[in-house]
Image (tube, rainbow, N blue to C red; front, side, top):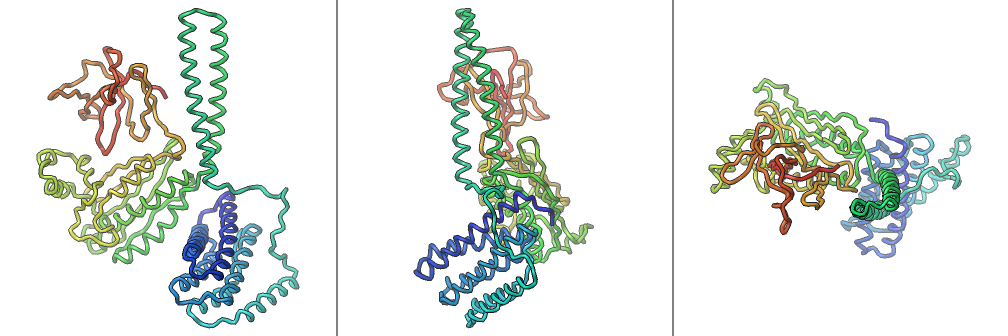
Length: 517
């Protein structure tokens, strides 16, 4: 397992301590009111979170202890285990042991210790057997005495305020600060607009005093803008988490679910130190799960099919990640059967009869759009694993939620790749400002392919639609003014700046007067 950074470990330990304290309160509350389902569900969620996070960071002792208590309260929820005093006492013993593990990680970097007594007792209780809690308490007391007599350092947290090097901040609090920065940036844009007006008045009046004021105003706005974006960037980092938290568990997912399908599949997930916005990370897990399951079910062949095709009997699913300035490119690929685009063409023609002529002339890029449409599947027999033939519309919807885009590349018999492109953070909207008739618009960067320059003589007109040639294709062109109601056209020139935008694998050119970064 790759080394986990100290910041992540400290965050994990702080979270476990907080969740453990909440769990203790919920345990007592449930003893008072056993029918409080909200408290019981919250307790189970917290235990599950402790268990899952411990597993991801390799702290198996805490994982086992949390799992043992979770099993007990699942039994309580199902009515198979009585919520007795004996149960509460045992759970508190386990909670104390988890707290001891937390201190052990902080001091020694590991939670490794003997917890057989706790696990066996929890298993018995979860199975409905009687547990002698008094005997357990006596054994715990003797263990502590033996530990002290052995001159071992007792794991007790005795931290001075001056020793505290980090604090935990709720994500909601960070979001409030980010929102405040967004307001500041909006006001800063207004100041820049006022500066433009001041410059116009200066040019009209040729007033030297006004010129001095304007230059100082401009300098102050620039300094303010630099400071705002610098501090904002540091605040964004508070909400960033390593993408490896999501990627690492997929090695086990691929191994287990390939066995379920009777396939031999190996995961190839290189280590990465890329960190992204927590909000994006939450969406990313579902996106990757759907793509991985799609690859397992639709992409990778059975060992017999692979052998017959001259391939290694063991397939490979790769998940690679690389950072591109302020964006991430994440690729999920397999070396399976690939996509039969002619099969897609046939299925699409059958489903969309009115578009049959159009579909007949479509290339692979256009045909791949159908795979992202709700309910579209080329597989005759759907399975539980691949999502009952829902297709990849879930992926497309969730990628759009994180302001990203996805494209598909596939070669029949060789394999398929899904390339996701999304920002590091959703805290700000990245893009380009474009001008048209003195109005300014922001085009989101996830839809921008390129910005090009074309003369009027290079335009092509077909059936009353204007096109330009771009990367060997004819791309329809529209003026920015025609895309908005009541927006007048701009200045007519001999050549245009054209922004190439893409959505759902469809590209258009947008004619603008000026592009500003």
